[in-house]
Image (cartoon, rainbow, N blue to C red; front, side, top):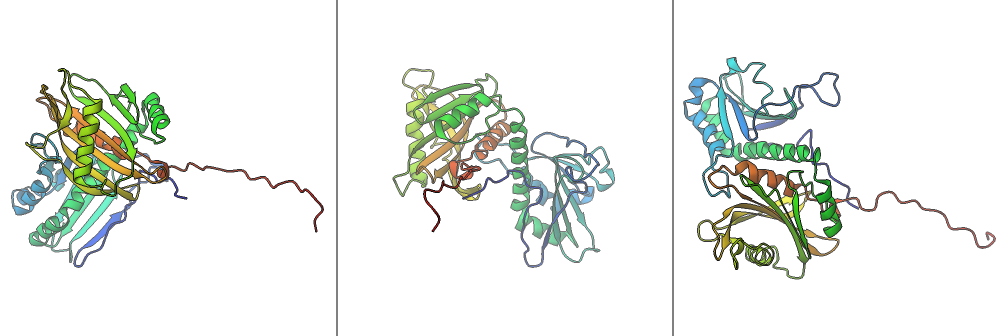
Length: 361
């Protein structure tokens, strides 16, 4: 029997590679095990404070860091950086700045004999993500970023997702959570902002119905009968079929579909709760008479107990407005989904010995 896994990790296992020592530091103060209370982390979502010397920031070392975090967020119809970057000199890294939610602290000095990356949680504040990168010279620093930059970036992105999941749990739409559990037998942390729901056979749709930044979440299931299910062609075709049948547009005959011409969806294999999942990022649009569109994000998994496929998807409509944070928020909701194999459905069982029916022999 599989046990329920926690979404919050105080420590995270990393790797050791030749010539590069990667460590995970324990936060200076533990929120649970210390009498000292950490201050609340400050700053906006996906905002990063880079602590680096001004001269280095203007050199190739600074450009390497900037290019890493300034790259476009995938799956959006317009250019938006993965993270918003603010840079400060080490001598200006004061107590006011130390509670920043995401910090990349860098140091290049000959006193280091080898490069090192240290990953920490809740170092100066809670909840905080803190990464320290040191190197003996600029050349080796750039090599670290080129080789392990994506891992550093993903560490910050995953930490933001964990924060959102944790934040959502404090204010859930309990009615919607129950609707999903009653319909599918799965658990999803649906935030209270998503309020207007539609329930059909093996299909659930809930939206905030906002006129400014609209967020929609859908969940649908179907039997697992085709070994080719977890392929790009199958999943995108299935999405088109489900959306056409269930989400009409405002104009008669129009419906929500997938954008293939402007930017084809991108699929990759990921791990959710220790198991395989298919992740797809792409663009949606209203076909046959509509003008709406935007980004979508989906996770598709196999419900092993019921032998069915479960897809959870979030999509955003926010014309002339940045969409990164809105779709990332729905991405966190998707990652909160727990299938029956993720849930300890057996619980505690009381066993009573049967009464004797005859004399003991």
